Each structure stands twice: as structure tokens, then as C-alpha cells.
Image (cartoon, rainbow, N blue to C red; front, side, top):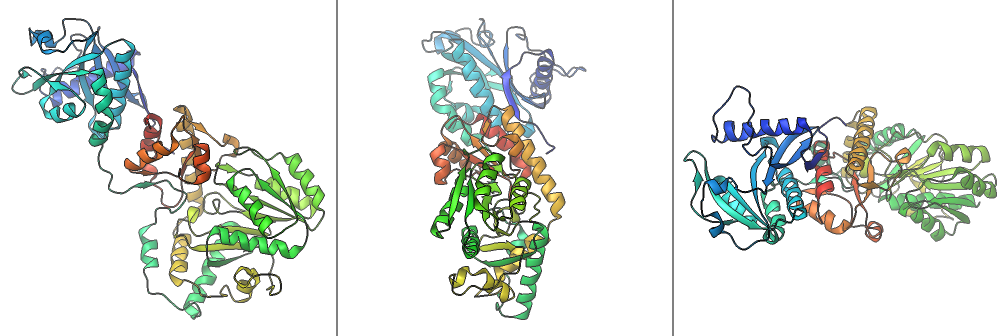
Length: 530
């Protein structure tokens, strides 16, 4: 993904950073606030420049915000209020905070929050427990929310008046977090980075709102045939059936087809949804063996081959392609080779990979998917891909789970939803899928790299990372962090029980995800204090 890099908060130490501080100082206190006279260089060095400690916010090596602290007397306020100490409460060590400046395009609360938190840490490390400041009268309300106490008369000039104030470190700790939240800009629509429901495009909402049609009417049957064909083309499959239900229902239908084989098989599990396949197999009373790998790990080919060898020809292997719980993309070419060499049927859960990664289901006997997630449509339709014609099995399967009934009925076995099918058809037709999948891959790679640069831990190893699912291990408090991000207008996945048990949260690039807000999301993840 091309776009701005992450925000970095630090003590300015490089000559280039200090030069940029002086230029930002000029833009703020000469051009914006008429406190100093203009000069042709566009540079304003503070009179205490050599004694100041500057905290800066950097984006792509550019200083976009600054604030400074100085602890050597006399302060600038000493020159404006000769009796300064008479206004101050008792303190161990006093410092002066000055020159708060943030570029206009970054005045959204994030830079301000990072600056003041970094400054508070720096002051605490140096033993300061009281700070004084000359705050612009335009921001008096903000300073009060931070815990500053105004004192004395205004200082400065009529064109640039300032209010002297002091702040104890304890008061700052009590007031800073709620005050910063109040300064953040309102977010009109949440930025959705969930695995579902995803952000729905307007044309899909319009399609869903059309009058319903009979599921036996010729126009509906034609539309259903068209969407089945498009789905099969997108997945590289021979055929697809679409029915009312979820991905879980699609997997139940796959399990029913495996039961018809009457042969032993292997289930692979390296996350929550692999374990659910094992549960499907147990509920269908399938003879099977489960090969497990740690959550977040990839499968050892030799272990998979050894388990497959025990099945014999005519057996089967059932696995998750994109393990949504961990963000691991399992090795489909490897699974296809193992099964092909041994004459095994291969079944895949593609619920999170369809529409998120390039798919080629050639050599895959059965695969499950859904209308939501990567396809970006409304939840409510299950998809089952099959590479061979399927006949009904009335003696073996429940009616609703009999894939052959759908295949024999031109895709319609029972009551269907023309509205959901129409929306799904619009979702499949609206994208240039190769270009879209390239974008998701690039954005996912950028996101993982940016998070790692900021010290965040990611569950999936990079060589097996799914583009659209990034599962993060925050230092602590995943639930509180997720809730804080919700209040800031970002919807992430963290409430599922399997995520809560491990303290994980996820960023998912599915549906019409707001890619332009990814840099801001990275900043918030890296600087949030749950």
C-alpha cells in the first residue's frame, strides 16, 4: 500500500529534526499566530533553543508536531510575572512547557495525544512534578480539561494573548486521557475492519432493496445460474451451489458429501476453524484422524503425508484454507499434491479466502464459502463448490443438506431469497477481481510491516500470512483496546470467544474496507493505552 507511514513520537535528537522544529516554530508563531516578526529564511529559533528538550511527532521523517520542556530558571514566564513562585503550589521540581504546535492536517487528536503522553513520560523521568505554561487563550478550555490551573494576568500582546497556568503531574495523569478523547474529531461512520459483517457498497444495498421475485420464476433462475457461473470462475471450480445459510451450513453440507464416501479421512487443525471442521467430522460420525499444529503455525508436510498414507486411496482430507482465527494461509498447492499422489478427495473451507486471495480449486473436490467476508456482500448465503456432478442421496442425507438436490434442481431445491442473490450477483460483478486481490495483498503486506515497525506482534509468520486477516497479540488488554478503538470509530474483531481466551484482536481487509484510514489505525493501535 502506498500512503503515509506511521507516526513516531520521540525526543528530537537529529540535526534535521531540530531544523524542522525551527521551521514549524516559524509557521506557527509567525505565520499563524502573529507573535514574532517575519523573516526571509522561514526559520524561528527559540531564545532558549539550546536548553529546550523537544518532543516531536514524525511521519515519514517529517516533523508534524512538537512541544518542548525546559527546567532552567529563569523561565520565560519569570520575565512576564516577577512574582511567579507566589502563584505556584509547593513542588519538588518545576519545569516550563512551551511551543506546542501541530500542523493543520494533523490536528485530529492523535498527534496531540502522542506528544503530551511522551512529554509526561519525559518529565516524570526527570523528576518534575509541576509544570508552568503560557497557553494561548484560544485553547484555554482544552488546557483546563487537561488539569491546568490558570493564574495571574494575561501576558503576551493584544494580538497574541496568553494565559499563565500550572499543572501538577498527578492532575495531568487524571485528566489527560478523557481530555484527549474529547479533542479527537468526530467520526461520522465507523471504519469497519471486521471479518463480517463488512462495509456494504451502495449498489449492493440498492440491489437488496429491489422487490423480491419468486424463486421459481425464470428471471430469478437465470440470475442464479449467472452468479453460480461467476463464482465458479472466480474460484477456479467446476460448479457452485448457492443456498440460504452461513459458512457453517456449507461445511455441514460438505461433511454430508464426505459421509457418502464411507472411507476414512484426515482433518487438519491449526486454529479455531480447523477445530470446527474436526467437530463437523465428529458430528457426522466420519472415520477420521485429526492432525493438529499449534495455533499460528503451518503444517509439517511429512506429518500430513503420514496421516494421508494411513487413509488409503479413496479417502479424504479436509482443511481450512485461510484460518481466520490466526491469519494463517495454509498451503493449498501442498495439500493438492499430497492428495493427488495418494488418490484422496480434498475438501476445503474457503470461507475467508474467497474474494480475499487468488483461488484455484482445480483438483479440490468440495469447498465451502459464504456471501459475506471477502465477497463483500450481505451475510446469509452459503456457497458449496464441487468438481464432479452430484446426485441426490435421499437415504443418506437430511433434505436441506443434500447437495445433490440443489444440483438436480438447477440450483433451487427449496425457498430462496432473490434479494440476497441479486446483491451477491452485484458484488461478484462489480470488481476487477485480479486488481482487487492485488490491492488486498499489497495493503495487507503494508499493514503487517507497519505494525511490526511499531513493535506489535502478529500471530501468523510472514511467509504464511493471509492478506486479509491480521491477528495481533497486543501487550495487554485486547478487550479494552478494542473497545477504545470502537469509541474512536474503528471496528475490529476481538469479541469472539477464541480471541478473548488468547487476548488477540484482528484487522480484516474485507468488503469495502476504508484503506485510506489504515495509517491512522496503525497509529492508534501503536499508541493506545487500554
